[in-house]
Image (cartoon, rainbow, N blue to C red):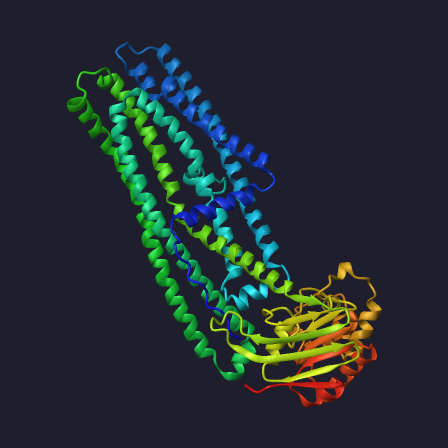
Length: 582
């Protein structure tokens, strides 16, 4: 089946597209709970404001330099001085415990925001993705790959990446602050540092700005590597999933070696992608290293420059004030180091935001296209009326598969459709492909129309749940005697005896191809539609079982529209519509 190639993802850096997508993430998280979310943010920023204020208070009135001066100052050592120093140490410990609690509150609030974002995105995605016809449209018509990975694995990555933005109590201690809360602390410290001595603080701020710029540039490049790495992981996962799904066919053909070569090539590409991701991730650690060496030596060199060349003799460069300024600037620089570490996760935030929001946007786009297709389809309570041409969707050149199809089916007029393009006609009839002419069908379900594909899908559940699908067993009357009778009619009585109606097993592994097709007939008998549209519904059945199933359908006065190539199917229909040759 022709599908559209996946669109190239462009502008995946920190541009307008990221700003728009991240803003929408926040909008989805806020939703109808604006007051609650803003209260959470207020609590977080107030908590970090208290953290910054207490840090300054600890340094200013209870700093270690004051304790050292008290003990080793010019005055003789006395027991009173030691007792006073110990009291100061106790106060410092108490204030630091308060700071630790405030930090934990801020991190917990950040985790709430991260979880809310994840929950909101999943809700928006599911609303579009599981609209009837959208799943097929996204994966088959639009040709998107790895949608499941984007919403499961990538969304989990986005939730963890938001720890770099809002904070997270489960993240490694250096990063649990988050960029936004830590920026509040950093700004408070900057204001105090400039109030103590602007010359040295200006030197330090300039160095910080250079580190910030480098970190942001490296993070933007890293974000593109995140997108590439996740896409490669998705390709490898898709290949392994397809191999598992078709393992029986592959084994018959002896194609394991070819599948292995494909998997190894995808793995090699993924390995190279990961190496480049690690290269640029390492580049984001350089500013942190610079800040470390600045704390060790650079700040003292700059203090000497200020004292000797810039402002010699001023009050700001007096030994006591300069020593106090240096000590606090070291604390400010440590906060900057943490902020730079958190900024190092900006690449993951950008990359995962693009990955997740791409899936959301594609699901919404597919939903709009499907709704537009459904609006062109009419409703016909009396039967099926179809007069159209079949065009391959997403082919670009508008390739026409079947130039003209005219199909009219009323109750009791069973029709067999055969010939070239019958599967494409079926997809258009089922609303999976766009309508180029006019198509009208009854509503889906009991008393309307019921579609049965060649390969019948089995759900995770009991045998009874397989029969009532797509309805939920909990929403249907519990007439299990009727279900057992239907299964006996279509030749699945042995399955009932072996497994029962209420045992949950992997039915894909239990049922053969022929048994799955008999399950399709069982679903038709249970739902009892006016018209059953069936695609190669008996291709895996022997003649005796085929007759048994078709006779059971006829006994319930269900009108059949069968898309089939098997000549024996024709005898169960009043008309045969043969489509033209290619």
